[in-house]
Length: 521
Image (tube, rainbow, N blue to C red; front, side):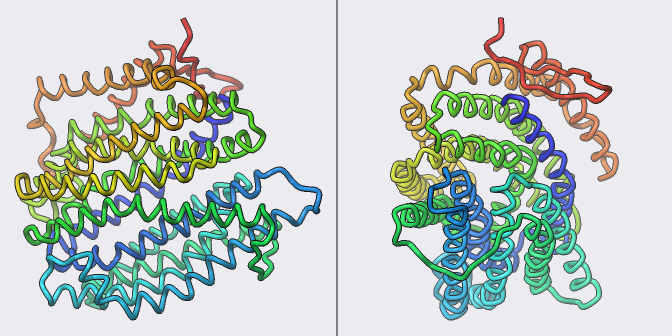
């Protein structure tokens, strides 16, 4: 099992690299073309709700629900039970999406006022106009999410990974054509976003057809199994929306700050892209499928093992990556954003947010595994309670810290609330697995020490040598940072090997990375 989890994680990490590079390129293009401005603030306000629905429901909820459905033990009623349940979920999501699109179009002015009240009337009107167009992305994303969820339930991750690559490539192409050739401004971002959702759908279609799933229009919830699935779906929707409320609160508060404050937050959050695409989802997706099957068969010992090894792998991958981002935040921010319309002052503002954002990224990364574990165990009410308290705490801390610390106070408030919420979730998970919280977190001791040793070593080197030697041009800076990243990665690998956490073995001429036993002597 240890090899299967690690192998799946490595495969998905490799497949996600191209998507990562293109996603970073897209953010660089947006920063260079529009900078941190009030106009771009209006776009982020317009995009927030459709993107939350797409990420949380279409590309999040459906994957989780389909994995739970197809890992349920087959009943005596026949082989079509899973297909009927899945078809009912698809029907419900499509029906809700078709209702939601006109609702968003009609209520766009009210919604943008609620979420970005601090913007001036002109930009609120602009945001409402963009929200009406962006609501159209919900239909192709709902279908693409259906395809992706069923593919993931069958443990076929390649089509969706390829779709992400091509969809971001399409966004880049449409953005440049619309801005350079057609002379469009913010509307270019809207059309590129719509194009990306359509391309993702088309890329997932061939792989979906090969799964053999047959959709039948139905909406049934009379049987206990069907009602249980719909209860899970509704609870996950509520959970996802509560999770997104933290960002909504941050945007709302930032809208009362200086022009470009929302954009600074958004560009800071984009540093999470490497963690989400290469690490978190590459560990979480294969882990969820295993955990769902083990929870369904009441294999608590196997579930604990899967959870422990997934968190160990997450620690070895995520902590060094976040540490690298935080220690070298100023040259990285300058390299990534400081060009075109994005000023040096804006780049420094984004860099100043990254230490607190690093804590947020870490908590979110670990939560992808712990939350999936609680979902597999059916602890939905507990999750909703924790997220509700976390959101309220974030709102109160924002009200307290924003007047004193400005935008940094917004990020600090979220970091504190997410840390406390993540610890609460981890304690609840350990209790559900019938293991002490100390023992549960103790399994992460050696991976955490190894990762922190790597980060502290990097910090000492940077403190001694400084960053003035890093190249002045973007190309020279990129080469220097890439060399530092490669050296840091190799050093971390050697440190982890010294802790007997990682073994590099050569079998049949092909290098294999195996997660070692953290408890080895």
